[in-house]
Figure 1: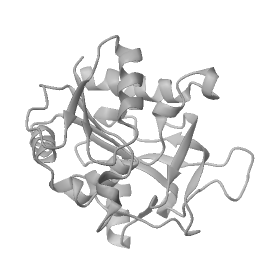
Figure 2: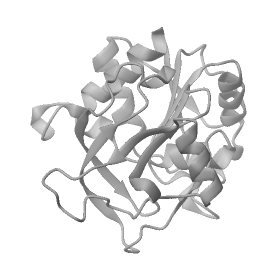
Figure 3: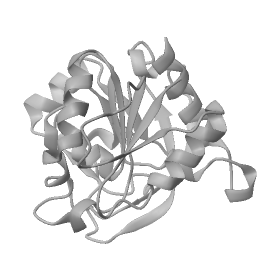
Amino acid sequence: MNISVITFPGSNCDRDVITAAAEITGKQPTAVWHKDTDLGNPDLVIIPGGFSFGDYLRCGAIASKSPAMDEVIEHSLRGGMVMGICNGFQVLVETGLLPGALIRNKGLKFVCRDTNLKTHQSGKDIMAGFEDGEEMIIPVAHNEGQFYADDDTLKRIQDNGQIAFTYAPINGEDDYNPNGAALDIAGITSENGRVLGMMPHPERKMSATVGGADGRRLLTAIIEASQS
């Protein structure tokens, strides 16, 4: 299993993702600097969280033009698997590999807390390791995490089965959606089901030591699906 992790100036979750992937696979991922054009023949490319290029212009906008991202786009066009986490999701949206936009949180404040995620569309390639309706506690940490799209795009995302994760209440609480995302969307896939973007950080829930291992379950499922 070959995993490549892209690092940009301002990334701050790349080492967490590399450590998590190494623990799951027993193999060290390939660290790719944003100026590099060799991804290392990966089965899965992960674009981690952080504040690439200081979030100037728009979150992920400058990073989306990096040489490494040209290779990620080519990798995806060949049917390769790609996962973007938080800022990585923003980068994938800016490249056009995923639809919609990530805008300022509804409360206009940075949000850092646990959220309850519900899985959908297990038939999609990258989601094949899940059952629909599974729930997991995964933390978020973002300022621009509100998924937005016009009505036609939202309908197309629903009709194509591209919603991968939604925020969900645990005990009927009203504030389960941390950012006001449309349709409670926490993550979506590409139409072919091989590119995934999500705002929550599974690499931060890898063991009971940090409050739970749901993130290990989530990342393991994505990694195993990428090998099929």
